Length: 216
Image 1: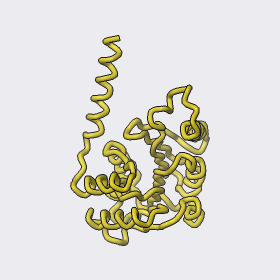
Image 2: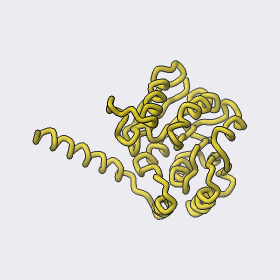
Image 3: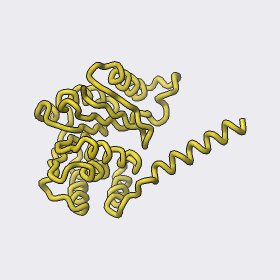
Image 4: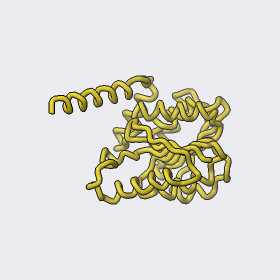
């Protein structure tokens, strides 16, 4: 038992180290603090760093973000994108987007680098062009995961990347006894992506879990 406990402790310490490996500057810390104030759970620094990596590796010029929040994930994405890249970010909360707009400006991004759209993602996404995007990041309620994945398949160019946040379902994803609606939805979505011929996926155990998948 002592060995198991020690192993668990070491794993937790390693995860904490991984999360703190890439530090956040004042702009990101401010955006994170504002997210807490309005009751949002922003992507962790580890997940943010992974998003920046995915954007940079794909030389992303056009990115869609579902869930603007207060701009934490948006800043990470923009910092990985090309200097001429545009982030299209969608959220239903005007006030959150007002904060994000200010954060993007404080991070040094010109207004033209972001296209901020207020509305339900599933109403907005059909208006976006097919095959025109390099990366689609989904940070939304689990109930919309399946529809967002289907939309991403249409929006992404071949070789484009889908990133789905929150796929560890609060740690319940690997528990067969967890049968709540959210966990079941997440489990079914990531299974469908894994078994689809359209995606090459990997589950990244950073933050709340990020499923990354390249469109074939």
